[in-house]
Amino acid sequence: MWRTEMQKDSLLIDKYRDKILNGPIGRTLFWLGLPLMVVQLVNVSYNVADTYWLSRYSEVAYAAPRQIWPFFMIVSAFTHGLSTANTAIISQAIGAREYEYARRIISYFASTMLLTGFSLSLLFLALGPYVYKYLMTTPQEIYGYTVEYSRVISLDLLLSSVYLSYSTVLQAIGDTRTPSRAGVLSSLLNIVLDPFFIFGVRAGDLVVIPSLGVAGAAWATVVSRFVGVLVILRVITGKYPFMIVRPSLSIERSWLLKSISIGAPVSLMMASNSLAFIFQNRLVNSFGAYVAAAAAIGFVLMDLADAALWGLTMAIATMVGQAIGAGLGRRARDVAKNSMLYIGASVFAGSMLILALRGHFISVFTSVPSIFNEADKFITYLAPTLALFAVFFVGMSVGRGSGHTLYPTLVGVFRLWVIRILVGYILAFKLAMGTTGLWLSMSLSNLFAGLLIVPWILRGGWTKRVT
Image (cartoon, rainbow, N blue to C red; front, side):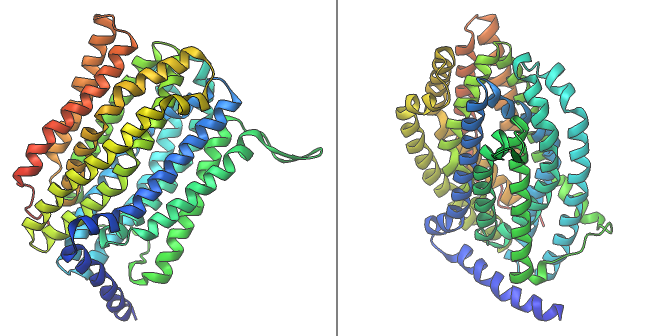
C-alpha cells in the first residue's frame, strides 16, 4: 500500500521538481514565492492588528509583544536551525530523485521538532520574566503587560514547531501553496479574534468572552496557530499520504549529525541575533517607555516593507537546493544572481512608498507627540537601507538551500553585534547622539550586511552538494 502511495507522491513531486529546475528563473521564483509573500503580508497584517487594538487598550501596551520576541527567537533558534538543515537535505534528495531517503528524513525531522518544541516552551515559560526584568530592563510601565503576553505565547513554541516542520517539508518539495493557505487562514483568524479576546464580548449581563487585555492578543495568536496546524495536517493526510509519519525516538545518528552541522551556524546566528536584539531593546528601553513604543510602531512599518522579502527568499532556498541536488551548479548561481536583482528592487519600491506615507501610518497608532516624532525619525533612518537588507537575506537563503551557511552567519553576527550594538552604543551614549545614534546604527547594519554578502554570492563557491 505504501509503495502505491509513494509512486503517486513521486509523480506529484516530479512535477514540482521539473518546474523548479527547468522553468524561467523569474517566473519560477514568483510562482514559488508569491504564496509565501501573501502569507507574510497577512502575518504582518495581524501584527498591525495587534498593535492597533492594543494601542486602543493602553497608551504603551502595544510595545509588550516586541519585548518578548527576541527571547522567543533565542529559545526557538534550534528548531529553525533544524528547519534550515532539512530544507537543504530534503530538497537536494528530491532533486536527486531519492524519494525513499527523503521519507526517512521527514520521519526523523518531524519527531525531533515535536520533542524540541515541547521542551523549549517550558524553558521559555520559566525564564521569560527574569530575562525581561534583568537582561532587557523592560520599563516598569510595560513590564506587567510583557509578562502576561509571554506566559500565554509560550504555547506557541510547541505549535510552531509542528507547523514549521511540515511547512519546511512542503516547501522543500516545491509545494508552497499548502503552507501558505494554512498561514493565511491562521493569520486572518488572528486578526478577527484580536478585539474579542482583548476587550471581551458581553451579551447583556452574560460574559461570553472575558476581557483579557494584552494576554488576549497572545491567546488569539495561539488559537489561530492551532487552527493552522490542523489545516496543514489535514491537507497532508489527503494529498501526501506518503509523507505521514509516526513520532519516533529512533533517530538515525548520521542524519542528526548532518542536521546539526548544517543547522548549527544558523541556530547560533539566530540565537546570537536574538541576544543582540535583547541588548538592542535594552538600549532602546533605557530611553523610556515612549521610545520603546515608538520603536514598536516603526518596526511594524518596516515589517510591511519587508513583506516582499520573506516569501521570495524562502523560494530561493528551494530553487538553489534542488538545482544543486540535480548537479545544475550554473542554474543555482543564476537563481541567486537574478534573485538579488528582483528582490532588491521590490523591497526598495516598497520602502520608498512607506517612507512617503509614514506620517499617516504612525497617526493610526498614537496621538502622543513624543511617540509620533520618535517613530517618524526611526522610519526615516531605516527605510532607505531596506533594499540592502533584502540582498543580505537573499544570501542567507542561498546558504540555506545550499547547506553552506557559515559565511552568511558570520556576516549576520557582524551586522548586529559590531554595527548595531557596539556602534549603536558608542553613537547613542559615548557620543551623546541619543536615539538618533541608535537608529543610525541600525541603518548602517543593513548597509554593511548587503555589501558584504554580494561578493560571496557572485563567486558561487557554495554550489557543492552537502548530501
